[in-house]
Length: 121
Length: 108
Image (cartoon, rainbow over all chains, first blue to last red; front, top):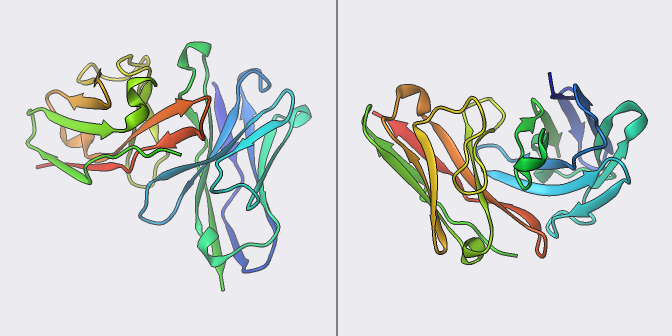
């Protein structure tokens, strides 16, 4: 079964750093780009950025450029999203997502279960 | 960057047809994708490339495109279709991926 499994919920304070993970299984991890998507409480989906696991080529939504870093360790089939200094406004659910077939280019049919990040000021 | 605009809410009676629109200047040139998200769950891909359905998605979900507006149609809505729905496009020349503003569908 193709799946993405994310790390558990986090409770942090403003100014702290954080790295959350997304582990792929059931498919060749390096084949398809992996995206990160933010969903603030009661709000919609926002695409943050995307990374190609084979080369670590990362692209960012301009709104998130410089605010987060997306990385990958293909040896353990895991993608990461990290912050160097969290803000209260980073409180949100974060999803990783990818696609399982080439024909689904542009779409995400495989999603992680989400990682809730709560940041207190 | 560009925006994709959806109506905030749509109501439909059980068994009737619901239509959710997604508008954006770039949509005449780009494919659109649709997702369903139920409370506490990750999004699920319903439609890709404007009108294609992934395997396992019920036939009552269909997509269409006309100019800068795309439409997700739920034919014969069921109580289980009550959820948030998001359109999404992908542009290799822009911010790559954009989600619509989202539409809450109520079946009552």
